[in-house]
Image (cartoon, rainbow, N blue to C red; front, top):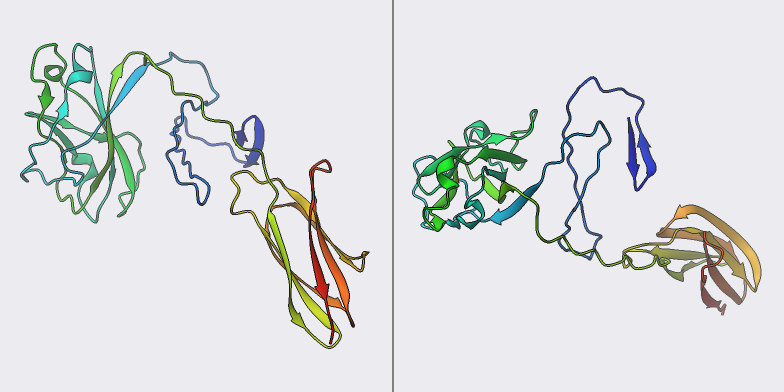
Length: 285
């Protein structure tokens, strides 16, 4: 089994799966300090070519994000039936965060007077509290005609013994080709070097402790570094290689007596990139 990212192999596992079907779970997390919404337009999986399914997704919000018990009163909040008018078929997909109980195989979506059974889209799912499970169900023909109400009220999810289960998201899926494409994502900023700081943290009679910190938390894209060098009075005193490194804290002990000048020079892996340095003056009384 091999895993590729942008055409480059990033992982390999010496095992041949015996299963004939598989589902793919993809998670995307923004960099620390840059929260935001991430949209995935296309995911490619190698294999024999099959018919290309075209579908239009329309996000819908349930009247309450709490999954109700089968006979519990529902708020009078529904969803517009516009995406369902005149289409030959439609499906409701929803993701539920499970609570401490309930039967995920018995989830029902109530859309007005219609009740649509929903089933997990994958097998082998976890029923543990806090697990998220995606379910789907085909909508009946009575909801798809050109005539009928403008809204389906209420729109809620129901499950026996729901026990604080929550609706994460829901959407209608109907056949067709979207009229608009997602805008291209803005280009990523060029990678930058970690911010380097250096300071003398301790002094002994014949030595000092030099602390060097490389902080890359501020950057969305980080240029790798080869390491750093320490110079004492313009003479090379220490070299610390960090192949591919991007950050961290390092401490060195230097044997020094009397006053000196200490310089720390950052060395990027790319020799054409501008380097960085920190200059310290060490005085002795």
